Image (tube, rainbow, N blue to C red):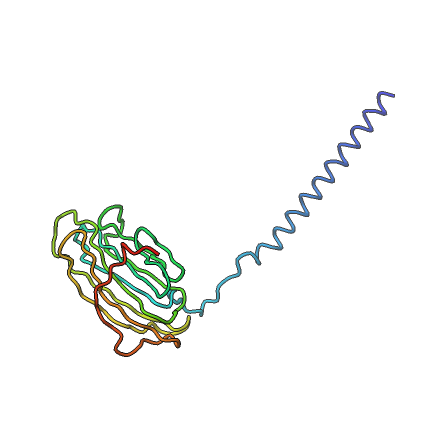
Length: 200
């Protein structure tokens, strides 16, 4: 009787181990079959295109330890800058603090839009801080537009400005885009319009 119980327990253990091993083997087989489909390889001849339809780039001298902030506003949207990095249309992708926490030592900010709604766009700069009191600070802003993903970036304008005091906000460029996503001729101007204090 005791020998029969030991034999039965041994058979149950073997069956249980076999079922568990079969289930594990089935799971591993499914994972192996799915692996190639989780991240399909990118074709090598596919060119890399920068994102965004409207691209706004800011540069100031790399040896100047200053925090210059880029502010952009699209029609019908809220201003986008260091305190609000994303709107419905624009996103600020890089908020450069000067030499603070900067591994590259490049003084550079960039904002991209998603889509090109018709209306007026505004691009401002704000001098938040200048650690080494280097004034005035020269800055260059370049604005480009890309009608679709495969199109080349067409330059709209490049602006050279000087920031002369901490806290200064200056409008570098304002321009209008039509319903076809094209620059409205004669719409480029620099009439001052503050964005940081705007509340929507």
